[in-house]
Length: 502
Ligand code: MSP
Image (cartoon, rainbow, N blue to C red; front, side, top):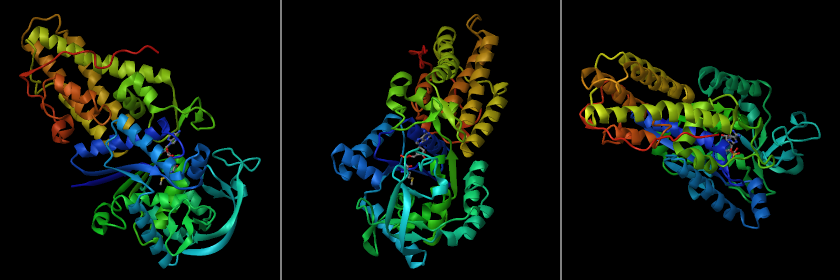
Protein backbone atom coordinates (compact mmCIF):
# COMPACT_ATOMS: atom_id res chain seq x y z
CA UNK A 1 0.00 0.00 0.00
CA UNK A 2 1.33 3.39 -0.94
CA UNK A 3 1.85 5.89 1.87
CA UNK A 4 0.85 9.50 1.46
CA UNK A 5 1.78 11.93 4.22
CA UNK A 6 0.61 15.45 3.42
CA UNK A 7 1.12 18.61 5.46
CA UNK A 8 0.08 22.25 5.45
CA UNK A 9 2.23 24.95 7.02
CA UNK A 10 1.35 25.38 10.67
CA UNK A 11 -0.34 28.75 10.99
CA UNK A 12 0.68 31.53 13.35
CA UNK A 13 -1.72 32.13 16.19
CA UNK A 14 -1.35 35.89 16.20
CA UNK A 15 -4.12 36.25 13.66
CA UNK A 16 -7.40 34.66 12.58
CA UNK A 17 -7.66 32.25 9.63
CA UNK A 18 -8.36 33.82 6.24
CA UNK A 19 -8.95 32.43 2.76
CA UNK A 20 -5.20 32.36 2.04
CA UNK A 21 -4.59 29.93 4.90
CA UNK A 22 -7.70 28.02 3.88
CA UNK A 23 -6.41 27.74 0.33
CA UNK A 24 -3.45 25.56 1.35
CA UNK A 25 -5.53 23.60 3.84
CA UNK A 26 -8.39 22.82 1.45
CA UNK A 27 -5.94 21.78 -1.26
CA UNK A 28 -4.18 19.43 1.15
CA UNK A 29 -7.57 18.09 2.20
CA UNK A 30 -8.67 17.40 -1.37
CA UNK A 31 -5.40 15.57 -2.00
CA UNK A 32 -5.78 13.52 1.15
CA UNK A 33 -9.31 12.60 0.10
CA UNK A 34 -8.19 11.59 -3.39
CA UNK A 35 -5.40 9.42 -2.03
CA UNK A 36 -7.73 7.77 0.48
CA UNK A 37 -10.02 6.80 -2.41
CA UNK A 38 -6.99 5.34 -4.16
CA UNK A 39 -6.58 3.07 -1.15
CA UNK A 40 -3.38 4.77 0.00
CA UNK A 41 -2.40 4.89 3.63
CA UNK A 42 -2.92 8.61 4.25
CA UNK A 43 -1.79 10.86 7.06
CA UNK A 44 -2.90 14.47 6.77
CA UNK A 45 -1.45 16.99 9.18
CA UNK A 46 -2.21 20.62 9.89
CA UNK A 47 -1.85 22.72 13.02
CA UNK A 48 -0.68 25.93 14.61
CA UNK A 49 2.67 27.61 15.14
CA UNK A 50 2.51 29.11 18.60
CA UNK A 51 5.90 30.45 19.61
CA UNK A 52 7.89 33.54 18.74
CA UNK A 53 7.87 37.26 19.21
CA UNK A 54 4.95 37.84 16.89
CA UNK A 55 2.65 35.72 19.04
CA UNK A 56 4.06 37.10 22.28
CA UNK A 57 3.39 40.64 21.04
CA UNK A 58 -0.12 39.84 19.83
CA UNK A 59 -0.84 38.42 23.29
CA UNK A 60 0.52 41.53 24.94
CA UNK A 61 -1.64 43.75 22.73
CA UNK A 62 -4.67 41.66 23.68
CA UNK A 63 -3.78 41.77 27.39
CA UNK A 64 -3.48 37.99 27.71
CA UNK A 65 -0.65 35.48 28.11
CA UNK A 66 0.96 33.94 25.02
CA UNK A 67 -0.52 30.59 26.02
CA UNK A 68 -4.01 32.09 26.20
CA UNK A 69 -3.47 33.76 22.84
CA UNK A 70 -2.37 30.41 21.40
CA UNK A 71 -5.29 28.49 22.93
CA UNK A 72 -7.84 30.92 21.57
CA UNK A 73 -6.51 31.28 18.06
CA UNK A 74 -5.61 27.65 17.66
CA UNK A 75 -9.23 26.86 18.45
CA UNK A 76 -10.36 29.27 15.74
CA UNK A 77 -8.24 27.41 13.21
CA UNK A 78 -9.69 24.10 14.30
CA UNK A 79 -13.20 25.46 13.92
CA UNK A 80 -12.47 27.05 10.56
CA UNK A 81 -11.18 23.74 9.22
CA UNK A 82 -14.10 21.82 10.62
CA UNK A 83 -16.49 24.24 8.93
CA UNK A 84 -14.76 23.55 5.60
CA UNK A 85 -14.99 19.75 6.01
CA UNK A 86 -11.23 19.45 6.37
CA UNK A 87 -10.42 15.84 7.20
CA UNK A 88 -7.03 16.21 8.90
CA UNK A 89 -5.84 13.16 10.85
CA UNK A 90 -3.98 15.24 13.39
CA UNK A 91 -3.79 18.85 14.48
CA UNK A 92 -0.44 19.72 15.95
CA UNK A 93 0.25 22.60 18.30
CA UNK A 94 3.86 23.51 18.84
CA UNK A 95 3.23 24.09 22.54
CA UNK A 96 2.51 20.41 23.04
CA UNK A 97 4.82 18.22 25.09
CA UNK A 98 5.41 15.82 22.19
CA UNK A 99 6.73 18.70 20.12
CA UNK A 100 9.12 19.91 22.84
CA UNK A 101 10.53 16.40 23.00
CA UNK A 102 10.93 16.05 19.25
CA UNK A 103 12.53 19.49 18.89
CA UNK A 104 14.99 18.77 21.68
CA UNK A 105 15.93 15.42 20.18
CA UNK A 106 16.37 16.66 16.62
CA UNK A 107 18.37 19.72 17.61
CA UNK A 108 20.50 17.73 20.01
CA UNK A 109 21.35 15.36 17.15
CA UNK A 110 22.38 18.30 14.92
CA UNK A 111 24.42 19.76 17.84
CA UNK A 112 26.10 16.42 18.57
CA UNK A 113 26.95 16.11 14.88
CA UNK A 114 28.81 19.43 15.10
CA UNK A 115 26.40 21.56 13.04
CA UNK A 116 25.42 24.01 15.79
CA UNK A 117 27.66 26.45 17.75
CA UNK A 118 27.45 29.58 19.93
CA UNK A 119 28.39 32.99 18.42
CA UNK A 120 27.68 36.65 19.13
CA UNK A 121 25.20 38.21 16.76
CA UNK A 122 23.74 41.57 15.87
CA UNK A 123 21.29 41.83 13.05
CA UNK A 124 18.35 43.51 11.38
CA UNK A 125 15.22 41.72 12.39
CA UNK A 126 11.68 41.78 10.96
CA UNK A 127 9.25 40.85 13.70
CA UNK A 128 6.50 39.98 11.22
CA UNK A 129 8.76 37.48 9.41
CA UNK A 130 10.49 36.43 12.62
CA UNK A 131 13.67 36.59 10.55
CA UNK A 132 16.95 38.43 10.32
CA UNK A 133 17.79 40.24 7.10
CA UNK A 134 20.98 41.67 5.67
CA UNK A 135 20.84 45.23 4.41
CA UNK A 136 20.98 44.28 0.74
CA UNK A 137 17.78 42.26 1.11
CA UNK A 138 15.78 45.19 2.44
CA UNK A 139 13.61 47.65 0.55
CA UNK A 140 14.08 51.39 0.63
CA UNK A 141 13.94 52.93 4.11
CA UNK A 142 15.30 49.70 5.65
CA UNK A 143 11.91 48.03 5.37
CA UNK A 144 11.15 44.34 5.13
CA UNK A 145 10.62 43.25 1.48
CA UNK A 146 7.56 41.19 2.48
CA UNK A 147 5.84 43.33 5.10
CA UNK A 148 7.13 46.76 4.06
CA UNK A 149 7.68 47.63 7.71
CA UNK A 150 10.93 48.89 9.26
CA UNK A 151 13.28 46.22 10.61
CA UNK A 152 14.72 46.45 14.15
CA UNK A 153 18.34 46.06 15.32
CA UNK A 154 18.62 43.07 17.67
CA UNK A 155 21.86 41.99 19.33
CA UNK A 156 22.42 38.84 21.35
CA UNK A 157 24.51 35.70 21.65
CA UNK A 158 22.95 33.00 19.51
CA UNK A 159 23.40 29.40 18.60
CA UNK A 160 24.18 29.21 14.93
CA UNK A 161 23.30 26.49 12.50
CA UNK A 162 26.31 26.03 10.22
CA UNK A 163 24.23 26.06 7.07
CA UNK A 164 27.03 27.23 4.80
CA UNK A 165 28.76 23.88 5.26
CA UNK A 166 25.78 22.05 3.77
CA UNK A 167 25.57 23.89 0.41
CA UNK A 168 27.21 21.11 -1.56
CA UNK A 169 25.04 18.42 -0.04
CA UNK A 170 21.92 20.47 -0.68
CA UNK A 171 22.85 21.00 -4.31
CA UNK A 172 23.55 17.29 -4.70
CA UNK A 173 20.16 16.54 -3.21
CA UNK A 174 18.46 18.87 -5.71
CA UNK A 175 20.43 17.25 -8.51
CA UNK A 176 19.41 13.74 -7.46
CA UNK A 177 15.77 14.60 -6.80
CA UNK A 178 14.46 16.64 -9.72
CA UNK A 179 10.85 16.35 -8.53
CA UNK A 180 11.50 17.29 -4.91
CA UNK A 181 10.43 20.91 -5.29
CA UNK A 182 7.61 21.85 -7.67
CA UNK A 183 6.90 23.79 -9.80
CA UNK A 184 10.20 23.95 -11.69
CA UNK A 185 10.42 27.74 -11.28
CA UNK A 186 10.39 27.35 -7.49
CA UNK A 187 12.96 24.59 -7.62
CA UNK A 188 15.18 26.95 -9.60
CA UNK A 189 14.56 29.70 -7.09
CA UNK A 190 15.68 27.41 -4.25
CA UNK A 191 18.77 26.28 -6.16
CA UNK A 192 19.51 29.95 -6.87
CA UNK A 193 19.39 30.76 -3.16
CA UNK A 194 21.89 27.99 -2.43
CA UNK A 195 24.20 28.90 -5.31
CA UNK A 196 24.01 32.55 -4.27
CA UNK A 197 25.89 31.55 -1.10
CA UNK A 198 24.39 30.40 2.18
CA UNK A 199 25.28 32.07 5.44
CA UNK A 200 25.19 30.32 8.78
CA UNK A 201 21.95 31.15 10.56
CA UNK A 202 21.04 32.13 14.03
CA UNK A 203 18.60 29.62 15.50
CA UNK A 204 18.25 30.63 19.16
CA UNK A 205 17.31 33.66 21.25
CA UNK A 206 17.96 34.72 24.81
CA UNK A 207 15.88 37.87 24.50
CA UNK A 208 12.57 36.04 24.48
CA UNK A 209 11.20 33.30 26.66
CA UNK A 210 8.25 32.20 24.56
CA UNK A 211 9.79 29.23 22.76
CA UNK A 212 11.16 25.71 23.04
CA UNK A 213 14.24 25.65 25.34
CA UNK A 214 17.59 24.66 23.87
CA UNK A 215 18.20 21.26 25.52
CA UNK A 216 21.92 21.82 26.25
CA UNK A 217 21.59 25.49 27.33
CA UNK A 218 18.39 26.50 29.13
CA UNK A 219 19.12 30.23 28.84
CA UNK A 220 18.15 30.04 25.14
CA UNK A 221 14.98 29.16 23.30
CA UNK A 222 14.92 28.14 19.66
CA UNK A 223 13.94 30.83 17.25
CA UNK A 224 10.35 30.12 16.25
CA UNK A 225 11.02 28.86 12.71
CA UNK A 226 13.36 26.10 13.88
CA UNK A 227 10.93 24.61 16.28
CA UNK A 228 8.10 25.14 13.77
CA UNK A 229 9.64 23.14 10.92
CA UNK A 230 10.18 20.20 13.22
CA UNK A 231 6.40 19.84 13.69
CA UNK A 232 6.32 17.70 10.55
CA UNK A 233 8.59 15.16 12.25
CA UNK A 234 6.91 15.39 15.66
CA UNK A 235 3.50 14.44 14.32
CA UNK A 236 4.67 11.13 12.90
CA UNK A 237 6.47 10.04 16.02
CA UNK A 238 9.93 11.63 15.98
CA UNK A 239 11.11 11.75 19.58
CA UNK A 240 8.39 9.41 20.83
CA UNK A 241 7.78 6.50 18.47
CA UNK A 242 10.76 5.70 16.22
CA UNK A 243 8.97 2.87 14.45
CA UNK A 244 6.10 5.10 13.46
CA UNK A 245 8.52 7.77 12.29
CA UNK A 246 10.28 5.17 10.11
CA UNK A 247 6.97 4.30 8.54
CA UNK A 248 6.10 7.85 7.42
CA UNK A 249 9.41 9.55 6.93
CA UNK A 250 10.55 10.78 4.42
CA UNK A 251 7.40 10.03 2.32
CA UNK A 252 6.08 13.49 3.11
CA UNK A 253 4.49 16.04 0.79
CA UNK A 254 4.71 19.57 2.15
CA UNK A 255 2.31 22.11 0.69
CA UNK A 256 3.46 25.68 1.22
CA UNK A 257 2.92 29.23 -0.01
CA UNK A 258 5.81 30.88 -1.81
CA UNK A 259 6.45 33.21 1.15
CA UNK A 260 8.06 30.38 3.08
CA UNK A 261 10.08 28.76 0.31
CA UNK A 262 13.50 29.58 1.80
CA UNK A 263 12.62 27.92 5.10
CA UNK A 264 11.18 24.79 3.55
CA UNK A 265 13.36 24.33 0.49
CA UNK A 266 16.73 25.31 1.97
CA UNK A 267 16.78 25.40 5.77
CA UNK A 268 14.52 22.40 6.43
CA UNK A 269 16.31 19.84 4.22
CA UNK A 270 19.62 21.12 5.61
CA UNK A 271 18.48 20.79 9.20
CA UNK A 272 17.30 17.25 8.55
CA UNK A 273 20.66 16.40 7.00
CA UNK A 274 22.44 17.90 10.01
CA UNK A 275 20.40 15.67 12.31
CA UNK A 276 21.16 12.63 10.17
CA UNK A 277 17.66 12.38 8.68
CA UNK A 278 16.43 12.26 5.09
CA UNK A 279 15.05 15.43 3.48
CA UNK A 280 11.34 15.48 2.55
CA UNK A 281 10.15 13.70 -0.55
CA UNK A 282 8.33 16.66 -1.97
CA UNK A 283 7.67 20.34 -1.39
CA UNK A 284 4.89 21.79 -3.54
CA UNK A 285 4.89 25.57 -3.63
CA UNK A 286 1.89 27.70 -4.53
CA UNK A 287 1.46 31.40 -5.17
CA UNK A 288 -0.51 34.03 -3.31
CA UNK A 289 -4.18 34.51 -3.35
CA UNK A 290 -4.46 38.22 -3.96
CA UNK A 291 -7.36 40.45 -3.07
CA UNK A 292 -7.59 43.54 -5.26
CA UNK A 293 -4.12 42.70 -6.58
CA UNK A 294 -2.54 42.64 -3.11
CA UNK A 295 -1.53 39.92 -0.67
CA UNK A 296 -3.96 39.68 2.21
CA UNK A 297 -2.64 41.09 5.43
CA UNK A 298 -3.79 42.46 8.72
CA UNK A 299 -2.30 45.85 7.89
CA UNK A 300 -3.92 46.07 4.45
CA UNK A 301 -7.31 45.23 6.03
CA UNK A 302 -8.16 43.02 3.10
CA UNK A 303 -8.51 39.68 4.80
CA UNK A 304 -11.54 37.57 3.97
CA UNK A 305 -12.79 34.98 6.46
CA UNK A 306 -13.75 31.63 4.91
CA UNK A 307 -17.01 31.60 6.89
CA UNK A 308 -18.26 34.72 5.09
CA UNK A 309 -18.02 32.99 1.73
CA UNK A 310 -19.39 29.69 3.05
CA UNK A 311 -22.49 31.60 4.17
CA UNK A 312 -23.13 32.58 0.54
CA UNK A 313 -21.83 29.60 -1.44
CA UNK A 314 -22.02 26.67 0.95
CA UNK A 315 -19.06 24.44 1.76
CA UNK A 316 -19.11 22.79 -1.66
CA UNK A 317 -19.32 26.11 -3.51
CA UNK A 318 -16.43 27.40 -1.43
CA UNK A 319 -14.18 24.41 -1.96
CA UNK A 320 -15.01 24.09 -5.62
CA UNK A 321 -14.10 27.69 -6.35
CA UNK A 322 -10.68 27.61 -4.74
CA UNK A 323 -9.77 24.21 -6.12
CA UNK A 324 -11.09 24.81 -9.63
CA UNK A 325 -10.43 28.50 -10.20
CA UNK A 326 -7.19 29.14 -8.34
CA UNK A 327 -4.61 26.98 -10.10
CA UNK A 328 -2.00 25.57 -7.73
CA UNK A 329 1.28 27.34 -8.51
CA UNK A 330 0.83 30.87 -9.82
CA UNK A 331 -0.64 33.83 -7.95
CA UNK A 332 -4.38 34.22 -8.35
CA UNK A 333 -6.69 37.15 -7.82
CA UNK A 334 -9.74 36.44 -5.73
CA UNK A 335 -12.93 38.03 -6.98
CA UNK A 336 -16.44 37.54 -5.67
CA UNK A 337 -17.86 38.04 -9.18
CA UNK A 338 -15.64 35.31 -10.61
CA UNK A 339 -16.72 33.03 -7.77
CA UNK A 340 -20.40 33.66 -8.55
CA UNK A 341 -19.88 33.09 -12.23
CA UNK A 342 -17.99 29.80 -11.77
CA UNK A 343 -20.57 28.61 -9.26
CA UNK A 344 -23.42 29.38 -11.65
CA UNK A 345 -21.82 27.85 -14.71
CA UNK A 346 -20.26 24.67 -13.31
CA UNK A 347 -22.38 23.88 -10.29
CA UNK A 348 -25.84 25.41 -10.77
CA UNK A 349 -26.08 25.06 -14.57
CA UNK A 350 -23.96 22.11 -15.55
CA UNK A 351 -23.95 19.66 -12.67
CA UNK A 352 -27.10 20.86 -10.89
CA UNK A 353 -29.13 20.83 -14.11
CA UNK A 354 -27.91 17.41 -15.13
CA UNK A 355 -29.06 15.95 -11.85
CA UNK A 356 -32.38 17.82 -11.93
CA UNK A 357 -33.17 16.87 -15.53
CA UNK A 358 -32.20 13.24 -15.14
CA UNK A 359 -34.17 12.73 -11.95
CA UNK A 360 -37.24 14.49 -13.39
CA UNK A 361 -37.26 12.47 -16.61
CA UNK A 362 -36.57 9.19 -14.80
CA UNK A 363 -39.61 9.90 -12.66
CA UNK A 364 -41.82 10.76 -15.63
CA UNK A 365 -40.66 8.19 -18.15
CA UNK A 366 -39.22 5.33 -16.11
CA UNK A 367 -41.51 5.25 -13.09
CA UNK A 368 -38.72 6.63 -10.90
CA UNK A 369 -36.50 3.61 -11.47
CA UNK A 370 -33.03 4.38 -12.90
CA UNK A 371 -32.05 2.35 -15.99
CA UNK A 372 -28.62 0.78 -16.29
CA UNK A 373 -26.00 2.42 -18.54
CA UNK A 374 -25.27 1.15 -22.01
CA UNK A 375 -22.01 -0.87 -22.04
CA UNK A 376 -21.26 0.43 -25.56
CA UNK A 377 -22.05 4.06 -24.85
CA UNK A 378 -19.88 6.67 -26.57
CA UNK A 379 -19.45 8.11 -23.05
CA UNK A 380 -17.51 5.06 -21.97
CA UNK A 381 -14.35 6.20 -23.76
CA UNK A 382 -14.85 9.75 -22.49
CA UNK A 383 -15.10 8.45 -18.94
CA UNK A 384 -11.87 6.47 -19.33
CA UNK A 385 -10.00 9.50 -20.67
CA UNK A 386 -11.40 11.75 -17.99
CA UNK A 387 -10.31 9.35 -15.27
CA UNK A 388 -6.78 9.18 -16.67
CA UNK A 389 -6.51 12.96 -16.87
CA UNK A 390 -8.04 13.58 -13.46
CA UNK A 391 -5.90 10.96 -11.79
CA UNK A 392 -2.70 12.38 -13.28
CA UNK A 393 -3.72 15.89 -12.35
CA UNK A 394 -4.33 14.92 -8.69
CA UNK A 395 -0.92 13.20 -8.66
CA UNK A 396 0.68 16.39 -9.95
CA UNK A 397 -1.19 18.49 -7.37
CA UNK A 398 -3.22 20.22 -10.05
CA UNK A 399 -6.78 20.13 -8.65
CA UNK A 400 -8.01 22.73 -11.11
CA UNK A 401 -7.04 20.49 -14.01
CA UNK A 402 -8.51 17.43 -12.33
CA UNK A 403 -11.84 19.17 -11.91
CA UNK A 404 -11.76 20.67 -15.37
CA UNK A 405 -11.30 17.17 -16.79
CA UNK A 406 -14.10 15.83 -14.61
CA UNK A 407 -16.53 18.48 -15.84
CA UNK A 408 -16.03 17.33 -19.40
CA UNK A 409 -18.16 14.34 -18.46
CA UNK A 410 -20.90 16.63 -17.17
CA UNK A 411 -20.91 18.64 -20.39
CA UNK A 412 -20.95 15.57 -22.61
CA UNK A 413 -23.83 14.04 -20.65
CA UNK A 414 -25.81 17.26 -20.94
CA UNK A 415 -25.10 17.34 -24.66
CA UNK A 416 -26.35 13.79 -25.14
CA UNK A 417 -29.53 14.66 -23.25
CA UNK A 418 -30.09 17.69 -25.44
CA UNK A 419 -29.59 15.63 -28.51
CA UNK A 420 -31.87 12.76 -27.47
CA UNK A 421 -34.51 14.97 -25.79
CA UNK A 422 -35.88 12.06 -23.74
CA UNK A 423 -38.47 14.39 -22.17
CA UNK A 424 -40.22 14.53 -25.57
CA UNK A 425 -39.96 10.82 -26.35
CA UNK A 426 -42.16 7.89 -25.41
CA UNK A 427 -40.84 5.58 -22.70
CA UNK A 428 -38.78 2.77 -24.14
CA UNK A 429 -35.24 1.52 -24.80
CA UNK A 430 -34.00 4.80 -26.35
CA UNK A 431 -35.07 6.82 -23.35
CA UNK A 432 -33.62 4.20 -21.01
CA UNK A 433 -30.31 4.24 -22.86
CA UNK A 434 -29.67 7.95 -22.57
CA UNK A 435 -30.89 8.16 -18.97
CA UNK A 436 -28.83 5.13 -17.93
CA UNK A 437 -25.72 6.75 -19.38
CA UNK A 438 -26.45 10.02 -17.62
CA UNK A 439 -27.00 8.28 -14.30
CA UNK A 440 -23.65 6.58 -14.77
CA UNK A 441 -22.05 9.94 -15.48
CA UNK A 442 -23.62 11.34 -12.32
CA UNK A 443 -22.16 8.43 -10.37
CA UNK A 444 -18.71 8.97 -11.87
CA UNK A 445 -18.75 12.72 -11.36
CA UNK A 446 -19.89 12.33 -7.74
CA UNK A 447 -16.97 9.99 -7.25
CA UNK A 448 -14.29 12.02 -9.03
CA UNK A 449 -15.46 15.36 -7.64
CA UNK A 450 -15.80 14.11 -4.07
CA UNK A 451 -12.41 15.51 -2.96
CA UNK A 452 -13.86 18.94 -3.75
CA UNK A 453 -17.62 18.53 -3.23
CA UNK A 454 -17.66 16.80 0.13
CA UNK A 455 -21.41 17.13 0.59
CA UNK A 456 -23.01 17.31 -2.85
CA UNK A 457 -21.19 14.19 -4.01
CA UNK A 458 -22.84 12.11 -1.29
CA UNK A 459 -26.21 13.74 -2.02
CA UNK A 460 -25.96 12.91 -5.75
CA UNK A 461 -25.01 9.37 -4.79
CA UNK A 462 -28.11 9.12 -2.60
CA UNK A 463 -30.45 10.67 -5.15
CA UNK A 464 -29.46 8.24 -7.89
CA UNK A 465 -30.30 5.44 -5.48
CA UNK A 466 -26.90 4.31 -4.23
CA UNK A 467 -26.86 3.53 -0.55
CA UNK A 468 -23.13 3.20 0.12
CA UNK A 469 -20.77 5.97 1.12
CA UNK A 470 -19.12 7.66 -1.83
CA UNK A 471 -15.82 8.01 0.05
CA UNK A 472 -15.75 4.25 0.67
CA UNK A 473 -15.32 3.60 -3.07
CA UNK A 474 -11.93 2.46 -4.34
CA UNK A 475 -10.14 3.80 -7.37
CA UNK A 476 -9.47 2.87 -10.09
CA UNK A 477 -12.10 0.07 -9.97
CA UNK A 478 -15.00 2.34 -9.05
CA UNK A 479 -14.22 4.64 -11.99
CA UNK A 480 -14.84 1.89 -14.56
CA UNK A 481 -17.76 2.51 -16.87
CA UNK A 482 -20.85 0.48 -15.90
CA UNK A 483 -20.74 0.68 -12.13
CA UNK A 484 -24.29 2.04 -11.91
CA UNK A 485 -26.38 -1.10 -11.55
CA UNK A 486 -29.78 0.21 -12.74
CA UNK A 487 -33.04 -0.74 -11.09
CA UNK A 488 -32.56 1.73 -8.25
CA UNK A 489 -35.05 4.32 -7.06
CA UNK A 490 -34.04 7.76 -8.24
CA UNK A 491 -35.20 10.63 -6.07
CA UNK A 492 -35.95 14.17 -7.07
CA UNK A 493 -35.03 16.91 -4.67
CA UNK A 494 -34.47 20.59 -4.15
CA UNK A 495 -31.88 22.19 -6.46
CA UNK A 496 -28.44 21.08 -5.31
CA UNK A 497 -26.87 24.42 -6.21
CA UNK A 498 -29.45 27.22 -6.29
CA UNK A 499 -28.39 29.89 -8.78
CA UNK A 500 -26.68 32.92 -7.29
CA UNK A 501 -27.01 36.54 -8.30
CA UNK A 502 -23.87 38.63 -7.98
N1 MSP B 1 4.03 29.72 10.86
C1 MSP B 1 4.61 29.88 9.58
C2 MSP B 1 4.74 28.56 8.86
C3 MSP B 1 5.51 27.53 9.58
S1 MSP B 1 5.52 26.00 8.76
C4 MSP B 1 6.62 25.10 9.56
C5 MSP B 1 3.73 30.81 8.75
N2 MSP B 1 2.47 30.91 9.14
S2 MSP B 1 1.34 31.82 8.43
O1 MSP B 1 0.21 31.81 9.31
O2 MSP B 1 1.86 33.07 8.05
O3 MSP B 1 0.87 31.00 7.18
C6 MSP B 1 1.63 30.92 6.03
C7 MSP B 1 0.94 30.07 4.98
O4 MSP B 1 -0.45 30.42 4.85
C8 MSP B 1 1.52 30.34 3.61
O5 MSP B 1 2.70 29.65 3.33
C9 MSP B 1 0.39 29.85 2.73
O6 MSP B 1 0.39 28.46 2.71
C10 MSP B 1 -0.82 30.37 3.49
N3 MSP B 1 -1.15 31.73 3.07
C11 MSP B 1 -1.20 32.85 3.86
N4 MSP B 1 -1.58 33.90 3.10
C12 MSP B 1 -1.77 33.50 1.85
C13 MSP B 1 -2.25 34.09 0.68
N5 MSP B 1 -2.59 35.34 0.60
N6 MSP B 1 -2.39 33.30 -0.41
C14 MSP B 1 -2.14 31.96 -0.39
N7 MSP B 1 -1.68 31.39 0.71
C15 MSP B 1 -1.39 32.13 1.78
O7 MSP B 1 4.23 31.36 7.79
